[in-house]
Each structure stands twice: as structure tokens, then as C-alpha cells.
Length: 200
Image (cartoon, rainbow, N blue to C red; front, side, top):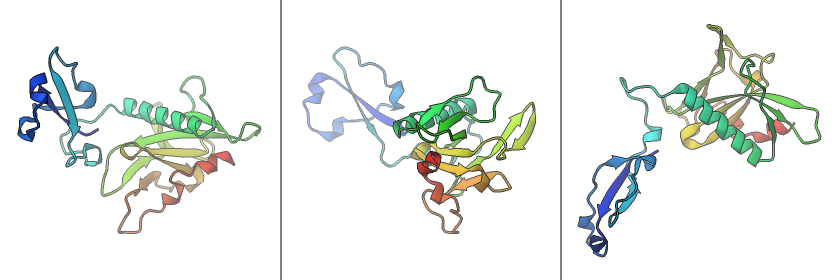
């Protein structure tokens, strides 16, 4: 989300065309813009020179709520998958190592276990997720016994990577370069938006 420059103008000022009258008051995010008071008009415009979502996190900057970020990724996957006509189910409780079950087609007996991971931080021109889980304070790597696909959701770009668990590296660290890489490291790019893999 980009910061927003807000302008408060009286009705009489709105009639003017002098751009010098449009002076920013302070920065606000979209959901923080208050309701205008009577007789007051509020304008908002995005700052084109700033893209906060693609900026690396600075040292000392507080970390975001990772649980909330994960829930956002799951909601985005559910919405996009259903929009694409996929049949999606969610297991009861959270004791399984997969988040969703996807039926390959309405008349098929083939089901895929889906684990959704998401990231919003750009690091060395790439986005990274870990194909790992924590189970009773024990960390492990996902295997074909746990899930069939790992879905990596790049939040600021609204991109999905549909990665078969068999294609995950042994290091369990997956790096994605949707904006290109000079080092030819974009080995997982052919899984970008590969929704057709879930219909097999």
C-alpha cells in the first residue's frame, strides 16, 4: 500500500484552479482517511515516486504479524482458486500440514493437498519462502507424505507460484524472481500462475 497525500479544502477553495492551493497535510493510508467534516472536502492521491510494498525491510523496522500475513495469503488463494473454477475444501482444525484440498475437476477422484506460503519482502531482487513447518517446537521440511503442492503467494505483486512438492529444493528455501534476475537464478519461474497443474 502506498502512502497517501491528503488535501483538505473548503468548498470555496475547490472552485479555484491554482495548483499551489493543493498542499499536503500529512501522510495517511487509505483505510486511515477520516470522514470529512461538514463543509470540508478531502482529496487523496498516491505518491507515484514511492512504492512501499517493494522496499526491503530496514534494520530495526518492526516485523509484521506473520499469522495475519499468512491468513491474508490463504484468503487470496481461496478467492483466486474459486474464481478460476477450482473446487476447494478446507480440513477441519489446524492439525494437518496442508491448508486446503483441491479437486482436480468436478467429476474427478483426484485431490491435491495444498500448503500456502506467502511473502511480501523483497530481498536481493527476489522473494523467498520456506517449505518448512513447526510441529510441537520441532521444525521439519514438507515432503510428498505431507503435501502435494506448495503455493507461494507474492503479496505486493499478487502473484501465485504453483510448485509441486517434488520440485522443492533440498534446502527447503524457495526463491522467486518475478522481476527478473541477472544471475539466471529464476529456476522456478515456469511455476508462476501454473494453475493448470491443479487440474491434472
